[in-house]
Length: 323
Image (cartoon, rainbow, N blue to C red; front, side, top):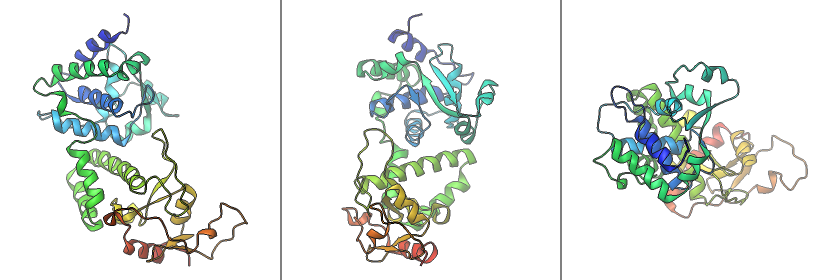
């Protein structure tokens, strides 16, 4: 059968959903459509990214009213079993045997370890790049599986879950955020919590460069990538493993070499937002050297409320910096 738009309309309207009419597959496909709407899908490779998981959760909250449990790994894995054969799982190196066994992957960690990405048909990829075809497929999913909802119910990144995380990263104190993280770990299943942690970490990595205008706060290096590839790093001042803190006050934006130097205590930041350089290393006379930045005042976000917290730098100087 020719894989034209009618083929995919039929495929999307006849998804295998089990005896309980599980909503997971249509929710995932709507989330993939949202990726294309936001210009976030550059090829026919669908990766397991924080944005895709967040979209899945946003769409679930907006559309699903049944008692089904929200589980991202299930549809990502089981879409590969559709008769229409438009979704193909590509394994990570060393996991080929796992996928070949056809054993269902149920946990988020297992999915990430086994699967590099899902590859959709090139024909479907081309249709999803076209607004008219994309809207037809979205309407098909909504009318078939969520007939009481309109396309306005799902507007991409801007749902309840996404907005809540963004607000917490930007507005919570470090103490509030850490307590919330502790509460989530106690109240969520292990798999739910790992998904949530994956999303929060990803949003921290996006938010910090945004408020620093994709500019390293020490060197001034700025790279505006045209892809989703991150070339300037979001750096925790107090490591997350210790602070449980993804808030804006616990982050700065650094290029990779200075990020590594900061994490290893070769540099720190003073209470005056100036670079402090350790005497415990030797470097050659290079234009890329670290010592050239000693005493330099770092670039700061425009908004006062987004400034890194001085007390976090104090902690770094006391516990990480090699004096």
